[in-house]
Amino acid sequence: MEKKNIDWSNLSFAYMKTDYRYVSDFKNGAWDEGRMITDDTVTISECAGVLQYAQTVFEGLKAYTTQDGKIVTFRPDLNGERLENSARRLEMPVFPKDRFVDAVIETVKANIGYVPPYGSGATLYIRPYMFGSNAVIGVKPADEYQFRVFTTPVGPYFKGGIKPITIRITDFDRAAPHGTGHIKAGLNYAMSLHAIVDAHNQGYDENMYLDAQTRTKVEETGGANFLFVTKDGKVVTPKSDSILPSITRRSLIYVAKEYLGLEAEEREVYVDELKDMAECGLCGTAAVISPVGKIVDHGREICLPSGMDEMGPVTKKLYDTLTGIQMGRIEAPKGWIYVIE
Image 1 (cartoon, rainbow, N blue to C red):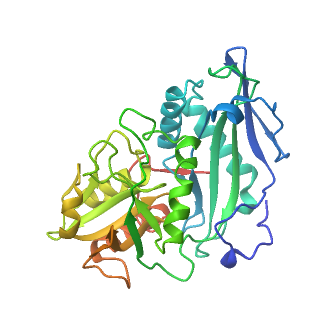
Image 2 (cartoon, rainbow, N blue to C red; image 1 turned 60 degrees about the vertical axis):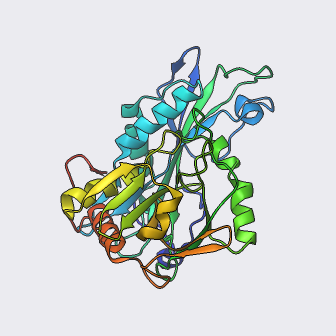
């Protein structure tokens, strides 16, 4: 398939309809074989489980054109595992990881003309998701479900270059202990919308959520994990049972240890430690790392030594190394890159 006539360099991070999407239905206790369709609309009952009780989970990953012209996707097996865990927590049927990976690859193949060229800064965003589709009026799991995958070309997350952001410590709670903070469910993101709009209205780029039980420990933002660098060069990420196990964060920890020879650990990070950190970033699929220059704790400013002009030196090495692996400039660990033939 020839490349679509798209102004790749001016794409925003927004939805654009592509030609095909994958659909599989769960009925009578089993998933069907799945199919590729062209219709981008979803027709469900007004009483569908997803509409009444928010029974939906999703994933996000990307396809890239590498330096040598191959089209690849990054660690989709881990997205499949995470979707399995999310489904179990919401009493939804598991869509098997191997079928998940196949569906992702087939959907990218079907929309290969929408994969941006190397060097454009753009990528093909892939959104697999699942929802309860049959009518449910009592508070219980649905009996029927639909799993879908769509793609959309998106521009770079940072238009005009990477600039550190300012975040605030919020009084809103993101997730309770033993709740659903560790899964990628739509309901978790819905509850964060008011907090992020409020943050923007107050002049901040993002929220830093604390643990709901003690409000002394750093958790994550509404859609990304935190990554810190201590003043002695150690990479640290917060550990909690109520934050999402970010694939980007796990990959960055591996890169820190195995590629850059840095000491790296996942542990509880206390608010009192923030003043002693040298660098901070938000890590996730969309941006890889968004650098943080300033944290505001109820009027008290914590200015990171890395500053408000550019990424800190360690964060920059992590970012360059991981994006280099994704784009084929640096050799990847075995099993990280899936080539789409």
